[in-house]
Length: 94
Image (cartoon, rainbow, N blue to C red; front, side, top):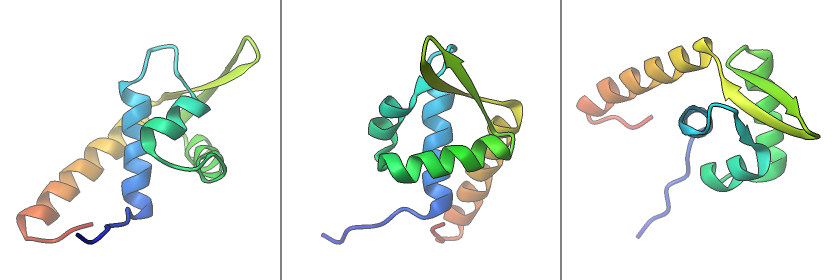
């Protein structure tokens, strides 16, 4: 059995999916690390990029940082899934 690595776009989609399916109050970084199977250091960089791109909002509450998805993040996720489905119908993997 060969191990397949995720591309950066797949990881971004996984992170956005986990934030989208999380609670309305947001998801904490530690929970997001576990659910999206990514190291804390790499996730922090990705969260910074997603926040500055307007796909996530960071909410600081009670000394904790949580993240919620924005409309732009939902749109990116929807378009990524659509493109992934199209590529898959041609036998291509993203």
